[in-house]
Amino acid sequence: MGPILTKNLIVKSIYLFLVFGGLASSSVLAQDKSQHILRNYGFDSARSYLTDHTTLTPDQKSASLLWVYENNPNPLSVNDISLSNLGLTEIPAFVLNYGNLNVLDLSNNSITVIPNELKKLKQLRNLNLSGNSLQGVDFQLPRLKRIKTLDLSRNELQELPTWVKRIKRIAHLDLGYNNLQSLPKVLKKFRQLESLDVRKNNLINFGDNFRTVKRLKSFQTLIAYNAQVKQIPDNIAWLKHLKIIDLSMNHIQSFSTEIGNLKQLEELYLHNSHIKALPPEISECQRLIMLTLQKNELIRLPEEFTELLNLTSLYLNNNQLEYLPEGIGNMNLSEVYIYHNKLTSLPTSFSDLKDLVHVRFDNTFISEFPVQLLSLNHIESINFTDSDISILPEEILSLQSLELLAFREAKIDRQHPSNEHYDELLKKLDERGVALYLIDYQ
Image 1 (cartoon, rainbow, N blue to C red):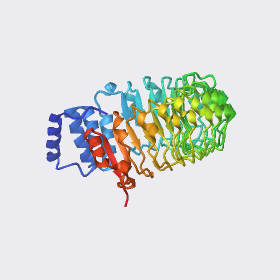
Image 2 (image 1 turned 45 degrees about the vertical axis):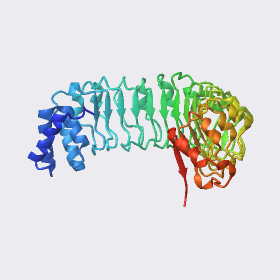
Image 3 (image 1 turned 90 degrees about the vertical axis):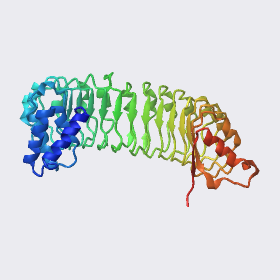
Image 4 (image 1 turned 135 degrees about the horizontal axis):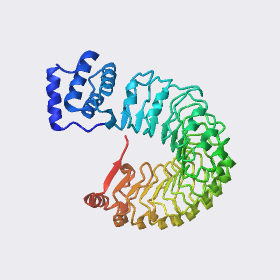
């Protein structure tokens, strides 16, 4: 988008509003207004005004915006064009005048043909064709040699069109919201591929073509959430260069021990995936720093899990865990979310998590404030809302880094001797700037 209108331009725009009696009631008058803005304030101001204005009807806005693009006196000065949601059935001819384009957004239209002349856009790096109802593999695209980012999401593709393999410099490929059943074989052609997004597909053959990407050393991110993935297969070991995998919101019925071969893995997203157990070999992913396992069906964690010494963020909430491994204190966690589980206590070694900053353990069966937390000098937030904890220990004042404390005040036993100074305790925390969420429910 162009720069925001300056104060003078805003004044002039108000003047125009008065001159034209408000925004035009027809596309003809809207074009006249666009023409005036373009001539007097320049292309960027005209584009910004039309894009941000809410009074024009969609048809008026589309017609006016297209008119501004077509009549721009200096198209070579523009690096990006957005023609999204304009009801286009073909690419307007004026696009070819923008010879220095880096970004072309044609999303959410009804385009089925890309003219071969588009290859004249030699500087094009980012092409967005999402939401155009593309179906067949016969859909053609010119040889755009410098494309780095290609978005074909939200179409109806059952496989990747063969012409895509000609764009060998693709680094980021988005195929989400299509009808793919496996990763495309043609991926091996993309030696510079860094990320692949196949979310919301029908990947019933998820692991079929993993071997085709084994030599793609730049391939680091795979997004496949809510994609009907049923298993993490043995050949996942072929994805040895991956740093980020998102397999959340699937129905994973089997989990291969070969996960341990992903030595470069740093972020693993597995939440909402009906996982019942983790293989001990996950501990071999020693570079893992982020792991999301919330909203699964875990009853326990393998003891080897605590060997993930670089893990800093752990999401275990909404499972069926009855206890955490005692070795958890050996880890270097900075945030732990264990609410909505069947825990009755925290491991003794929890007090050794000296880098812990955020902890949430509400909706568990923990009935006494864990003393392990009182020695964690870096902790900033503690949430035990919806727990049965009735005593707030005065030692909580020793947590000098504490910024947020959330609990259900109605559960506090005001008559208990240990709560004798409860009001004074809250006052001191408040004076220190601690955000107190004394949540209660009727």
